[in-house]
Image (tube, rainbow, N blue to C red; front, top):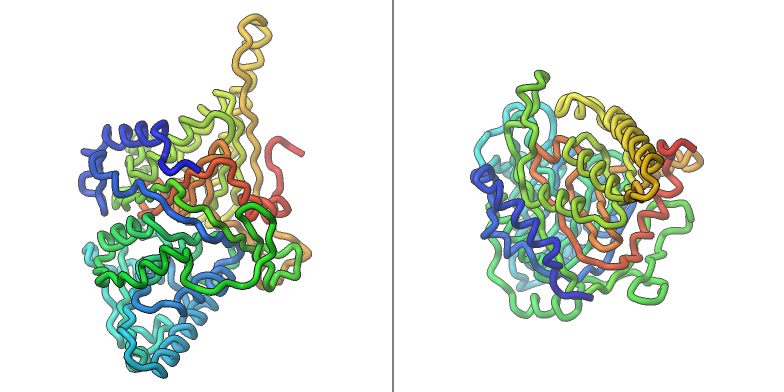
Amino acid sequence: MASQFPASFVDPWRELIGAHEHEQAHDFPAYSASTLAPLVTTSTLTELYVGTGHTIYERALLPAIRSAKRSVHLVTCFWADSPTANSIRATLFELAASRASQSDLPPLRITIGFSSRGLLQKLFHTSSRDGHVYPPSAWKALKLPDQQTLQSGSIELTVKTLFFTPFSVMHPKYLIIDEAEAWVPSCNVSWEKWFEGCVQLHGGAVQSLLSFHERVWGFGMSPPDATLTHRMQSNGTAMDRPATASLGGHAAVDLSGTVDTMSPTQSVKLNLESTPTILLPSSHHRNPGFSWIPFLRKPNPPMTPLNAAILTLFANAEHSIVLVTPNVTSKPVMHAILAALGRGVSVEIRTNESMMLLEQLATCGTTTSRCINKLIKEYSRLAGVHDRRSRSDLEAQPHPLGQLTVYYYQHRPEREGQPDEPVVSHFKMTMVDDTYLLLGSGNMDRASWWTSQELGILFYVPEFAERFLWENVLRVRGRRAFPPE
């Protein structure tokens, strides 16, 4: 596998950011064309997970927290009283008790950062970039152990929130263990039974993520532990894993606890070393640029590293674009999709028909179903123009139009009521030409493109066969909206 990201992507991506960098000078954090180098790195991908947010925490994130020796950095957007919060609480109690029974352990530093807990919390939240630090007396309300319990296990906890009115949530989600290994899930700490995904990795990308974490949350990094870091880099993992069944090549499916063949709770082990990787932050913006009065709207999105990367990927696409996203309401996305279809690129979209409707209306004044209908109408018009040109000039042989396919998520009715059956899809995935894989927190909606802070992670993985992990789950949970069945 190539060890460097192709210049055919990096150069136009950097140029696009550079052309707009003066507009983003006050971003949080800010990046210019000359400061992108630390974001372009490599990583070793070790495991992929799909399922509900709760099952991903139970199978991936909580075992990682239990394994921590020196530091835990957990960041999420939404923090709610939920089974996941209860599991985090139980894990911290277990960790404190385990450490209390041992002697001469170094302190374990745990930081938790989130953005949204409820309406009142957001209405009265400080506008300072320093955020709000919760005192130990407030931890109980967050379903966290008390300070005395944690101190008995030499655990130092800091809990902090960042939010900027009116809509600027900190939307990234990630977990960093011992500053050497990371998990990037799509899920919050909440009660929703949503379909989610998560990637586990280590290598240079973790250091890029730590730098981003420090710039946003201000949690200082611990002094490096050379022995621990060397062990992580050499072994590729910090924990023992459940037994797996080999599929050949570099992948294996984790079959533990998956007797239901229709269950979305799945994982696949990877061994993708030195994978070209780019960390893609996207700053929040307090002015959403939206207005009910058309001429007052801000037509162009902030040209953040993430937004610029998506536009570059779509502009460079030669064969295929596959999108899995909770919502589609970003006009730049729809314009870029139509342009790609016009070049003969096939586009597949998997989204939800009616997820978080009030939030969509508040942040962009429209809904995914309306935008998808408009996209289909424009595509049909484009197809008509293309057909007329083909018939009028038989010798010109115009480039064939790409195929547009749209699916709306639909849960399995026979599994309704099962604790791991998602009611909607919250997974975010973009794959271009079966080569570029984008995961992270960003949606293809206006909120993610204009107001929320987001974090994407882009991998250069030609012929990435392990995408079957989510494809198999979603293929049996989709209703085709276009072309009509």
